[in-house]
Each structure stands twice: as C-alpha cells, then as structure tokens.
Image (cartoon, rainbow, N blue to C red):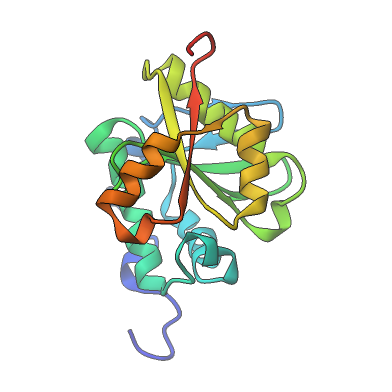
Length: 201
C-alpha cells in the first residue's frame, strides 16, 4: 500500500455483483433489535470503525494496539465465523451512532470455547450500550443457539469490563481460568466470567 493510499484494496467497497452477493449473505445474519440498539451483520464499511478501536489505546486491554492489517485479520475472522459456526460478530448500531461498537460470540485460535465479547468506540461509553448489547447477544446464545453458558475473557486490570460482567450477572469460573492458564501462557492473568442460562446452577 503506497503512503498516499489510506485504505487497502481489501477494505474498500467495490460495487457490482460481488458486493450485491455480500449484501445478500449479510442479510442471513440474525438481526437483534433491543430498546435502543440494533445488532446486525458487519458490512465492509464497518471496518473503519472496527480498525479505529483496534488501532487505538482502547485495545490495550485486548492485547493491542494493533496494526490496521492485524485489525483486518480480526475483523475477517470474526465475520467468517458466521459461515463456519453460525455465530460471530455483530455491528452495534445505536439510535444516534451507527457502528457504535461490536459484540461477538466468537473464537480466537486458542480459545477453548466461544467467547462473548464487546468493544465500543469512545463516544459510546457510559450510556449503557455495552450492557444492552452484551445481554442481547448472550440471550441469543441461550435462546437461538441453545447454549447453557458462554464465557467472557477479561484482562485482570480491566475494571470497567469486570463491573459490566458483574452487572450482567456473570460469575468468575476459577476452574476455567486455571485450565486456560495451563494451556496458554498469554492468558495466565485472564479472568473467565461465565454467563449461565436462567435456571442453571
């Protein structure tokens, strides 16, 4: 990519039959409407907002900041999960902020089970958007995917996310934390919060 080029060819919209086919595929991703939000399948134009988060200091607690290429790899991984596993990344559209952030039921390469994760742009913090989106994705996992539980992996110094997990009723799974630390050195300090379907112990 030349210095004058601000985006790679892969992240630009290319009108035509391919773009129309992509739109049809995206239309197959479940759309979740909440009181203030819509969770929808990611489109190519959402990558700009995704990369802005991943390239910034907001990504420090996720192992970043990342390069734009690394952000693209994460974005495409999470998007491809819809085709491979039937769950993946949603774009969060708020009433006044399209692409306010992202919520996912996804896998990283070394995740032992699917993760419920969320990340917002800075302007969308402090409005309850994270809780509303996280609970909607969690409830989809239980109702539509028939999961009994799902985990969130949280950096041990991410106080804001820890409070969010507790507000949403998740509890630490110490056995899962120990197993994760045993299999992956990079997760030695990662907290595992487990969300359980209502009525499950």
